[in-house]
Amino acid sequence: MSDPVHGAGAAPFPRHFDGKRFFNPDAPQAPGFLDVLRWKLTSRPEPSGRFVGDVEQTKPPSSVEGHDLRVTLINHSTLLLQQDGSHILTDPIWSDRASPLTWIGPRRRRKPGVRWEDLPRIDTVLLSHNHYDHLDLVSLRRLALREQSQFVVPTGAARLLRTQGIGPIHELDWGESLPLGRSTIHSVPAMHFSARGIFDRNRTLWCGYVIEAAGRVVYFAGDTAFGGHFAKIRERFGAPYLALLPIGAYEPRWFMSAVHMSPADAVRAHNILGAGTSIAIHHGTFQLADEGIDTPKKRLSECAPGDSFLALDNGQSVTIE
Image (cartoon, rainbow, N blue to C red; front, side, top):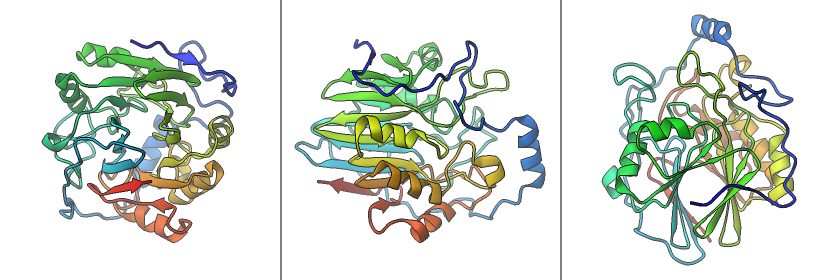
């Protein structure tokens, strides 16, 4: 198993751990319980259909050779990246709810764009943080049973996976790097928080990832608010060939701006990064905030710069040459 390393000439990412809990340095922290209560008592969610039956499920190829990068949006923040014979899966979720319980919590509004049985070999699974819509234990256990994948997680998150028999696992702090096969995975900052229960808030880290492979830089932002980390990531790695940027769960802004980007924020991040192409994630499957299920995609179309920022449907793929 490869050991994490600090890359030569790495940008000095700021201190983000106080000895007990992680935090967003020089930035607003996630809202607390009283803020959540105020939001829920004053919330006026935009109506959305209980289930939208417009997904055309697709079957990705068993392998993609050569220089082309094929990206498939499966759902939410779950993407399949296929390039040079290597397959990477981000924040996989196939469950019907983003919740610790099967009978309550945010429910799925659209099918996954790829059926489980049509998923090709997965070499690497990237997990950005431990929220239920990003770290779905049911999906991860199914992946582990295939005995094909290595799992990359932020600092502190490995313990939960090990209790479920999921592995092998590589744990990375911001600024650490990991050679895996033909790729190098770098953990980079995000502005967010972590929690799976009442008492574990910020006990584990959250992050984004930069993937260096086939002479390209791909940036998976995970879940993040807008902040100065985008400029730092570009300074360290250069302009990404492809950026995967979240656009959903942003209303109301007084509550969500500390942890989630709006579509307009994502366009600002795209421009700061200088990304050749960006693809929207974190939208269209679960209604996690007050905006409607398809509102982020509509808002992005109103402010996105031409055709360099794409909003795919579940199951839709794009090949970037």
